[in-house]
Image (cartoon, rainbow, N blue to C red; front, side, top):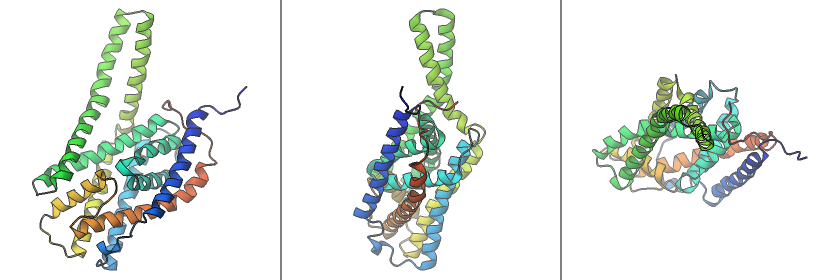
Length: 313
């Protein structure tokens, strides 16, 4: 008889992926050290630099609290472990191209909460509330002569994401309920039973996502507003400290955010504040990610396998 613990296949794969990701984070930080292009913000005085760094750290603290709020009704969890997992995966996502670190974020949050689907739900809801804040700002930026090459694709992507979210988590569960009732009344074959089971599973997973945000919308929106207020405040501080032209400030801010969200890695532009934003955030987040990785890895590698595909009941 096998002595492997339940769900060891998923859990062991997750542990192996974690080891690869941890090595990858350290390798990326070594090969392309953040802060190498210090000339982008060498003119910033110490007070402004500390304030900008503080705002950025505050934005990540708010992200951890937002994750904790989404999990509040479901089970006990360690906010410290959640913060460590957040910093590690956020740093990895910033260093990897095309936000590939989001996959690792799903796996690690799934391990913390005991279900891969719950990890997926958490990351999806995070991006929903980020999109809710960014879409109106990006639309306003288009009227402020922002870089349309960077801003327009992101607007289209976020709009499609918002529509897909509405269809998947609002429209689809209601229609699945109607189909389930119809099948129960009119069909009794084996295929109908299989279809019923499949539709019930899909519906329960979709409702699991919406249940995580139910009754918390006002607080989640407030936390998301604070997160992006800190991000934009950080950019404004850098622009002010570097004495760049204030013309097109809002457009420059949103172009920088568009670059940081969509580019393979933060890249400097002609505007020194944009370059400073990219370098400073990359430096802070990479240092925090490596710092969080040390205690998190010690716990992660000795913890019992918890990752599974099914959402916890």
